[in-house]
Length: 255
Image (tube, rainbow, N blue to C red; front, side):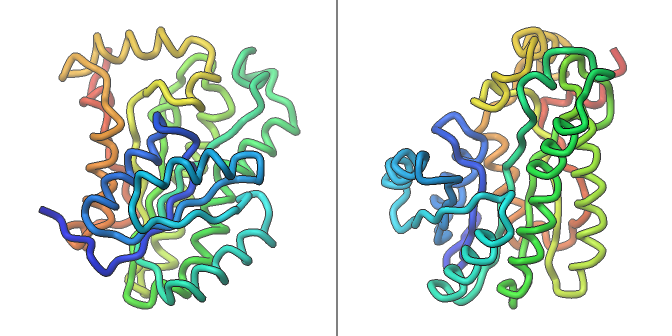
């Protein structure tokens, strides 16, 4: 059993109990990690605080990842409270709903900017802020999807943003490796999360995935949580800059 006693982890992106980030937080906490959970704004504060009641010892902090001032304030709070950090989970992605309804060619300039700012640049920003606290080395984990590599109808600008995210993982891994900080992505299969419901045709994606994946089913959030726990632990100290697929094997199939 993986032991995360004495490790401090921060998780970005918990929206509700169906979130991938929630499954990851549960796995980290069960392994003994001390958890910090973020929520975006005051409107979401109570829901976040209700969730962490199920995670003994966890603490909630406000942070809008599109705001550098809030990011800096958050990591000052973490430094003051915990002194150091071992794991950062970035499960954050967003694009305006209209960008996921029409053909990709109709992507707007503003929609493109928002998708990349929230879904990609935020990883760079929080990794930069976290690095000084990872004095014993650490693990940065983000969430991606197969739409970064192949065209998934209606995934549109999010697919392009995920491609940029995966490239950012590699560049960050190169920059932070000398500090013994590993940076990896988990490419999860489609899951019925709050964010995914904004994608037109999600039901078709789930059906096709279950039919074509070697395991003939869709992935569970708990399985993504297990992979994240592995990447956060000392079992993965030789892995960085990589994308780990947790998709029931869907990515290996041609058709």
